[in-house]
Amino acid sequence: MDVRSQTYFITLAEQNSLLKAAKALGISQPALSAWLNNLETELDTQLVIRSRTGIILTPAGRVYLEGSRKMIAERDRFYREARQLTGVKEEVVRIGGTASGGVRAFARLYRHFKTVMPSVTLQFVECYNRDMLDYVKKGKIDFGIGSIADPDIPEVECMIATSREHVLLVPEGFDGYYDPSNLRIDEEFPKADLDRFRNVPFIMPSEQVSFYEALNRLFEQADYRPNIIFQTSNTGALYSMIKAGNGIGVVSRQSFSPLDHVAPYSFDPPFLIYGITAYKKGRILTKAEQEVLNYQSEHSPGSGGTR
Image (cartoon, rainbow, N blue to C red; front, side, top):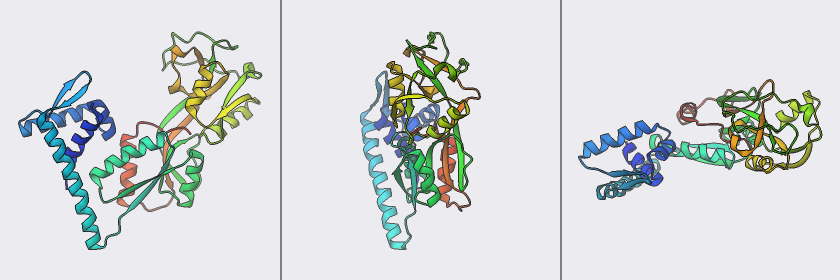
């Protein structure tokens, strides 16, 4: 039962924005705009009014929204009853991830599966990246969505979606600070000399964070022992503590803003963290499980979080 138009319209109404709806659906904004124009042409009536503050449903749009919700509810009821009559066991796919990026990735997948495979149930298992790989190995989850420093893992297949550089940030008032206001976010940063920061207060991620072990290995290779004054598993808190001038630290390059009075340094070679979708090596994937990989490969916007 094809309810793509109904799913798209409900998402558009809920997000109140073509751009936000397109992101939620995992498609481009031009594609969503073209779909809406075609739908309004087909129905020969205007369903939404575009404004600076979002979209406004016309009376016809409100009728279409109500009908869309009823159609999807009826579709779901039919599939439930059909499975009960045929005795077909419902397939469940378990996906693990963090409470931040993992949840966002799962929400996009859930919306996609409601459209293309409504008979499949997706379950979310909240976990740190460190535990996620162990859950995959032990079969506690079918897929893990998260971040890792080294994607070459025994027993686990890692499909890489992104790679993100992590950089050393030095706040204003600390030795090594320079004015970053003219930096472009994509330009090359100065190389970090850790000898310069041996006695400087350091804001350190806790062991639950995906790049904790890799960062420790980097320090060991440089014979550097950070002067740790604070640790946290919240990567947002890491950046906030550094930006507030409490100490230096390492965060994703994407967190850096030239307006925050923190000076960035790159490592040599660059310190990279990979966004992955992980599953156990050698397992035979069902059609639904292959669809998870296909969607992640085509639509994943990022790592799914670095915790």
